[in-house]
Every structure is written in structure tokens, then in C-alpha cells.
Length: 443
Image 1 (cartoon, rainbow, N blue to C red):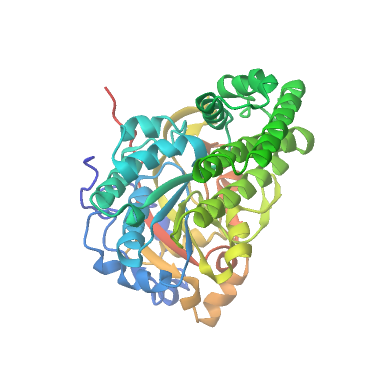
Image 2 (image 1 turned 90 degrees about the horizontal axis):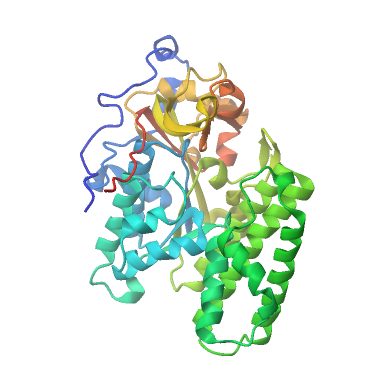
């Protein structure tokens, strides 16, 4: 098993917010907030979970738990989320795990987690995202496999990706499906499907630059294949058909996002993506016999209310989940005071490196959180019955919010997001000092 279980406090020996925190350590609401926080003793996923018993109580009634993160490259977030996944699996009988990663490509991880087949390092490499190609995520994948070993098949944790950003995986899976069946399918679309499986649609380009003829051909192909599945719905293995219809749907979702981006801009593309992730998570929950799922993604995706982003008004995945599951959905956000994280630095030609943030905005909730002693800690916003705190949180407050991109020239506008926190999240985890997530080591 990956050596990623060294016991530590998130603040031990690491960079914190010492450059700005001392001046804020007398925040007038710090003692009031401290009365409602639940200390977390360690970030070590293998440590005794007794300190998390109050957290278990807060999550006990949830059916879907969204595990956010304030950056895509923070070791402490990943280890704490691993601890929480273990808690959900072992204490609350969760048997579904979902990740902000492409649906088709992530099935190789499910194969390893459920059956122990394949190489987990290769499986992580195969989902394209450097964000999850880390020793911390690998440790979680290996633990899930270890947990499943020897259990009845119906009691094993399943692993699903819910994202739809690339065409290669689903298009390739569909080609294999039709070739294996030697099916009478619309073969005139093979060339387009093959192109989608190899060259894709350049979905990472600026939305307006997606090639219109290729996009139109992809849309025509998806429509033709959808018609074929409708006609052949009762032929063959029902579960295999359902799986490959989901491959087709995620291919369609990617194409829909590309179309929305080309015709309407980045905002529309982002809305489509979040809607797709919520749809795919619900599909997995409906498909499997288990009725609880933990979903891992950025806090901006798991938040439960729509709001203004730097690119416009958006409806995140969590808002769709809240609409569908109501109080059965629990959104957990994350914030941090200081330290380092991995990100693509635009000032260095998008080099992937260790980055850090300066002081947060003056009105940031991060400043209050950093003045509360003994992080990491957990806060459930329903526990906040203090009128002054309620008034404070009634206003939109910035918190740290870095995705995969770091721009040192735009810290307060694009590296922080504003939330009415009790509306956006049911709970929050705060960490003081952070360190970069560690990439998987390969020969």
C-alpha cells in the first residue's frame, strides 16, 4: 500500500499565515465561533476516527455528501477527505464514491477497487487529470480496494467518475462495444466516432475556436447512435447496454458543452458541465443498489446554491443535487489560512509548481477562521445559533478558492470566491498551513 499514512497535524512544521495572522488573531467573533467548531486531531487517514464522532452525527442523515476543496492541489485537503470517506464507508455504510473526473476513463479505477484487477497508478494516469494523479488519491484508491477485498460483491464500494470533459474515452468504449457485438449499427458514422476517440474536439481550446464542421459531425453521430440504442434497447445484456448508453450520454454531454461554449461562451459551457456531473452522479446512484454516495470535487462544484462567479452566474453541480435530494444532500466546503499547493502558474507559462497566496481580502471569512484556535476543525452551520455570527454569515464573504490555475496578479478576484456560507455549504473544514499534494512516483 502507498506510504501516505504518516500521522501529522495539518499545521506541524508547515507554512501558515504568520505574515498576516497575528494582526487578526483578536477577531471579535473568534471566541464565539470557536464555541461551535469541532476539532480534528489529525489529517492521517489511518488514525483512529474517535475525534470524528461528532462529524458522523452531523452526516448521519445525508444521502449524498459533497466533499469540496479550496484548491485542487492541497495534500491536507486530500488526506482529510480520505479520512472522511473512510468514515462514511465504515461508520455510515456508504458504498458509492464519485470523483470530479471523466466517467469512462474512471471505470479502470472501479475495476481495481472492486475486483483488484489492473494497476491503480496506470488507472490514475489514464484519467488525464494531474489533480488526482497524486499519492494522496492513490492511497484512497488502494484503501478502497483493501476494504472491498473478501466482501460480498454487493457490499463493495463502487468508484465512478461523474465528469464529461473529453471525447476520447466514451468514443473509444463505443467503438469497442460495436466491434465486439458485430452489430448492425450506423457504420457511416465510424469515421467521426474514430476521430472523437483519437483527436477529440479540442475541448480545452477557447470555446469560440472549436471547429464548427467537426462539432456538427459529432452531434449528428451522437444522434444516430442514440437512435440505434433506442431501437435495440431490449437486445442483449441489459446492464451492458445501460453502461454503453451512459458512455454515449457522456460523449453527448461533452459535445453539448463544446456547443454551448462556442455559441454562448465560457459561462454556458461551465453550466453544462456542472449539470452533466449532477446527472451522472444521479445515474450512478440510481443504477447501483446502494442509496448513499460521497462525491469529491472542488468546493465551487459541490456548493448547494447558484451564485455569481468571475465569469458570470452559474448553477453548480451541488445546486442541482440540492434540487433533487433536498436536505439529503450535505455540502462540505474547505478553506485554509496559508501554505502551499500545486497549481498551474500562468505567470510561468502554466508551469505546474508549488504556489501560495498572500493575505485574504479584508472582509474574508478566512480571517475569522484563521483566528480560531486549534485547526483543523469542522463547523456545521446549523450549529451556529449565535446572533452575531448569524449576522456575520448573512453577508457574502470571500474564502480561498483556487482551481487548477494560479494567477498571482489576480489573487482577490479569481483566487477567492464570495459565498453566503450557510447557504452555499452545510459545513466547512478549515486548515491552517497547507503543503502541495505529491505526484505519484513512477519509474
